[in-house]
Length: 162
Image (cartoon, rainbow, N blue to C red; front, side, top):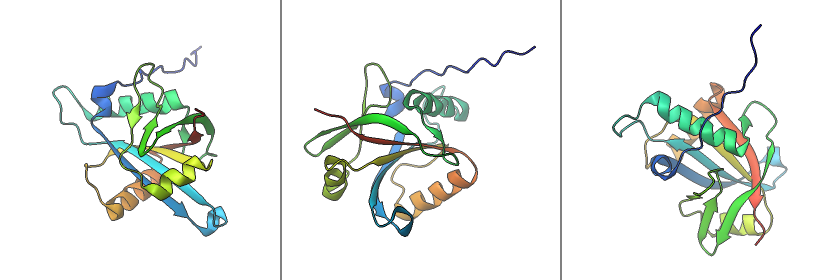
């Protein structure tokens, strides 16, 4: 008999987070009845550090997935708790590490206003590498690819109370 023991993956620290590629945007569509949804897409640059491999990068990203309780994108998007902290123009994501958070790149005034007003944010983690500096078209193609191949995880979050 085989036990179904879950895999426990460590939540990566600041050295791993420094290699992450993060994109944010605000989107309204017919599928959301015109209501805007803010997005955060997190992935990682291709392996570049000594000892870093595609497998170790994927394990780090899956550690973040586990810590934030994200689910495969093909499933219903779960509510994963209030994980965003706003301090003026700075937005920080609590990605589950006991001592570190992730500062998001400049999100824009509309994105922050949406979140400040209680709007939800969809956090997505893509397991495939994406180079830093990818523009909107490359991010859109990347997202379509990881969604189609089952290599994306998502969860809905909001701003944490002060």
